[in-house]
Figure (cartoon, rainbow, N blue to C red):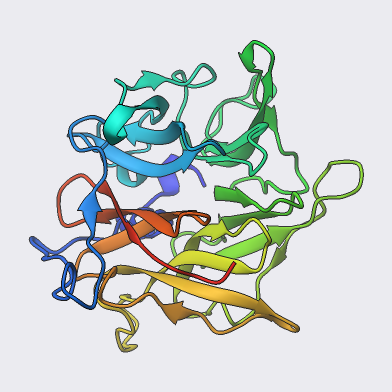
Length: 312
């Protein structure tokens, strides 16, 4: 999607950064005997005064990658940068640095593959020397000297003039992502899946079924479990369409489990996690039952984390 076509309402929805209330309290039940604590992650180091977007960890959980921007990225499309930091003793983190493959273009949504060998991300970087106004999916492979050069995922996955966002990969190599459909600004935002072929390429993607995607609301930010059977994502329930608000606030986090006929109807993660604020960009450390996500209560969104036990 080209920047000149981007209107605030759609820009908000792309990454679940809606027009926000002036203030929003955390879930009333959070921290009670019924809800695990929800705490800001790495305040002042990773969660700082800038906007934070999607965090991902290497398999050993010792290094984190996330994107950040000075301004509200969906509305401005200014340069966003992928950052990195490594874990220090006592759950402290090093000072962030710009990832070796980022820093010149708008780069978002980093996702480290389950084997740690590939990092996927979305970017507005030029393709074949041509400047772009929409986000495409890219990947970068780890080499003996660090990350290599970014590689475009190709036209089987990326559609000209539309945004592809928030890639997520299971251990079989299957790709999940969100796509913003034309026409702008009335296009839907849905979650798609592309199977990994035997030669390593991606097959043409298919839109996930009614258990996940709805025609009236926007679904985005997919986070797939390593076995490909559990899907976390964000859904925007509040639209000016006369429909009731099915969530707890603005964007909420949902979960769906894969069955014989596809993903089952998604369930809201509930008031222990979803508040009157905007929750989006889920990242799950499945082996630790830890959920990381962004909460935006009217100021630049920060990372939060909590305990969450899900099937995997």
